Image (tube, rainbow, N blue to C red; front, side):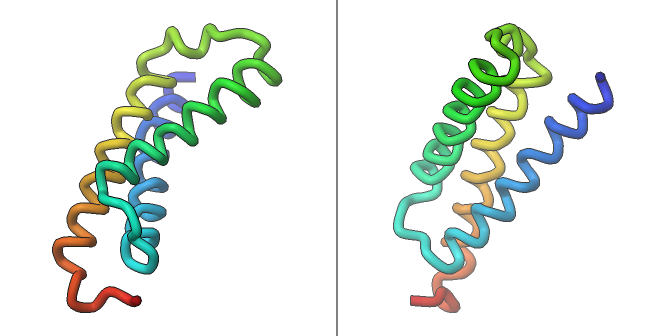
Length: 96
């Protein structure tokens, strides 16, 4: 289980960094911080409704820092940093 949590904690921010890069590169209608928190809201909603309520029928997953809170923190950080870098470095080549 520890290996799974580590993969999840590292994989989620990498995935959201890619999504953030694509979003800011081609659409980018929100600021990087706003985008990061929108992504987080989507993840939290999915963790609460289908995962905790429907599949697990328990909110125990939210007691795990490594399984829930750390990935959320890293998702926000990676999406925010990627968005900031993409909009800062890619303004001249951005598709409109």
